[in-house]
Length: 197
Image 1 (cartoon, rainbow, N blue to C red):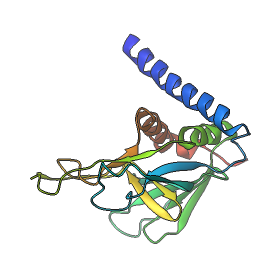
Image 2 (image 1 turned 120 degrees about the vertical axis):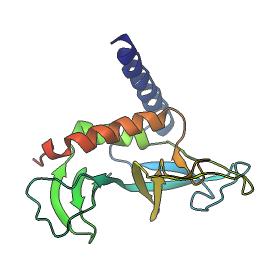
Image 3 (image 1 turned 120 degrees about the horizontal axis):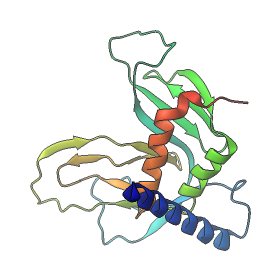
């Protein structure tokens, strides 16, 4: 029980620190501004070099959450295995349940507090890319992404790994990744309870 409280306290500390930093840097209301993250300049390159420290700022428009279970009530089954994903608008908080054909099947909405929390987590964050030398031998293993950011019309998969060495891995830098994963897990479990007003 104490360990759980320590984890929650740490997450609050990270969020609080990031929120204070953003307020002092922006000097304005972040609720109306664009949400932007820093990307390594080689974020979409398959062999990102750790020596490349240059970065670019990208406006985030959507967050995609893949692999939503296919037993969602009220959906007609068109095949034995459907792959659904949630697409969340950073500007409006509208959540769309999408299928493989990019059709919107259901619509939900984040409340104002949840949308502000999402913006707070992402605003001013950076995406870090893991560098793995090309000559390193790695076992075949694929770890799917837990979420993707749509930033400057690029899709950045977070948490994905293409082999046992972590080749191709990108995620939010530092403790923000843990906070964002917790937010995504909560959204994945409770999105059906979120109604639009």
